[in-house]
Image 1 (cartoon, rainbow, N blue to C red):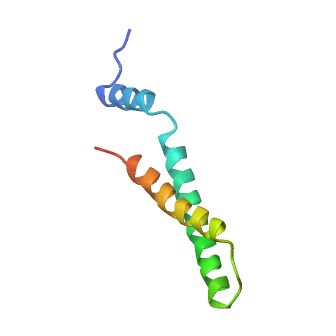
Image 2: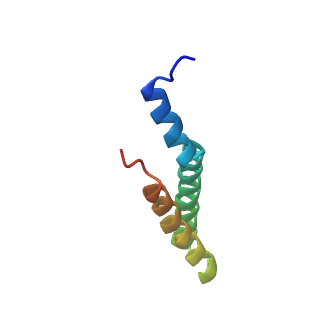
Length: 78
């Protein structure tokens, strides 16, 4: 029986320890972009004189902090 290439074995072991890492990173990037775009729209509404509920602004700020933080935590440590 042929042996597995050591590089392939290393890659497969790493993938088994952190499955779907690439998908998670894509989702964190998409969610971060959406949160910052939403915050930009909220700031433009505030600048135009519209009133916003404080809760909505706090939720958006929380998303702008949370998703980039999750992306940072999920980074490669190679």
